[in-house]
Length: 111
Image (cartoon, rainbow, N blue to C red; front, side, top):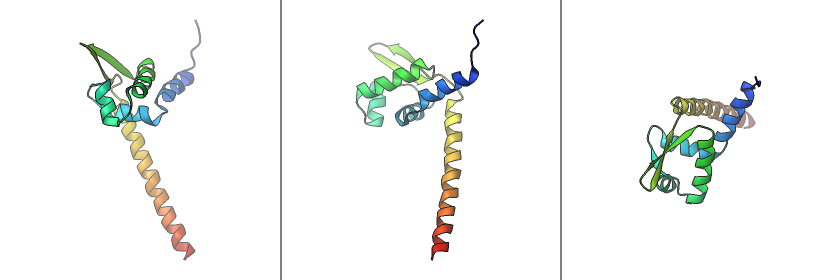
């Protein structure tokens, strides 16, 4: 049996999310499905650009695509991913707030 490094698998998953546009795609999808053209319209990006990033997310198992007529509708295929991204938002909010307080304190001490 081949040994699979769980940390390697985790880093592969995180690498698939490691682009601002991919995070935006996942966030706008949330718990709904959208066609490529709807995603392009929402993010104001070209179809080729969006399609490239959708392919990465789909290959990583983050998104699924369901064909309906001539269109493919994409949705998040991991139920806890929106909560994960919300947790990151809270971490960043705390960090920004802390840095703002530190910056104000430093500026105050400079005067």
